[in-house]
Length: 589
Image (cartoon, rainbow, N blue to C red):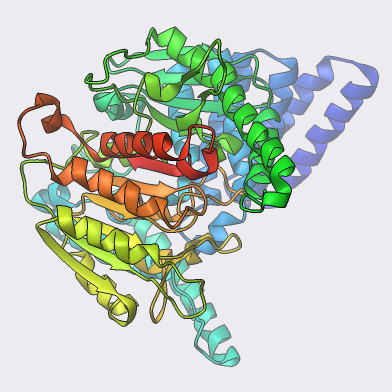
């Protein structure tokens, strides 16, 4: 039971493995496996040491044993992961281990697919997709059922959760260095105590009758209802294999192997896309460079179509809709790794005289950060076109320290034309305090301002308001009852942190996490003239649906409204002007 023993067993396993690689004696594989297994079972040691041993065991089994042996090893890996990103660390600290953990989970899911256990692959990918988000969301779990039977336990869990939520997202920007250090140490100690008590309470609650799976990671049976509004496609990219797992509305999982996508291909496509976006689009002297970059963009979208999207649509038997009046079905994308940065919603072959085809002919394509995010919102669109909705509009045509956004005033005007109930905060009215104070009073929020991605501290990503930054940190402490749609007409609101592709750390994910079931966002900076047009068409579809001349209008939701608006913009700016129309994306239901 010595705390150092797992590290020694881990070294022993590596030695046996090394000897096998030199001499080829298969007995050494069994010895290495046994050493790694023993290391994982010693709970008195650091979780990270046990995690490393479990990973070594899993990788060894993947290479030299059957998929079922590797599956056993990855089961142990997945059990230890929650302890590594345990609640007893601040949110920022938890992010440090995540890039490597993300890759491990992709590998685990690939093994589950090889072993024929598709539900396990979906459960593991969901677990890994958003470990930190899941913990943040769990701190806000409705305690109603528990409170009915065990009010004292529910109240204490509620108090501890609230304190943990604030402890995990605290910062000490405005304190002197000595006080800051002492405060941080006190905070850390208090946080560990709270986390220990939180775990204790969970154990106590789970011993009660009917609460055995309280706050546990969801099983596939619970996740499958995420496909209530149409199929959800989880795409897994791993070194061993790449696959799409399609959760169908019937509850089955359709496996679509993607043999033409290699482990490194999505990252190469991401880099190609980034170089296209950096092209100087408005200078006449760079027309040649502009053409090259446009062709690069076109080839990325063609690659996504041929190697990912078309094989999936073909397998599930979907055909393009010829009738423009048909209401298109939904297909929701939940991508992992570098694919999370690529525009699957625009995949297609463009400007080709013999074969012009793209995904928008087949379906409306929203995204989700996790399957759980769709469950929380009932996986059905909430916006009822027959109800009068209230819109909070924030516009910042000139924010101190940032470039001007003159189009935001026109954007605000077109929204107010469609919304019978609205509140418009602009310039000096749009302070951090004023916006936070108004958010709970409206079911739709429209932010037309600069969005800032902080890649080093993703939770400091923010919206730039008149008197400062409205950070994700602050937003995560809100609890909104009537939230229905957040429209983030700001720069780069859906760009995640490329170090953490498994963690959807961006402003759009933040809005989903605080309770907005639907979020419209942008993948990169948008044109000042394009935002008002998109806003006009989205709100015309959403709020102008009282005319019963088309029965479909009653079914409209924000994903469909955005789909129609982008189609309009694409016709106006030209299909090949990808930089203009591709960035608009929808998250959630």
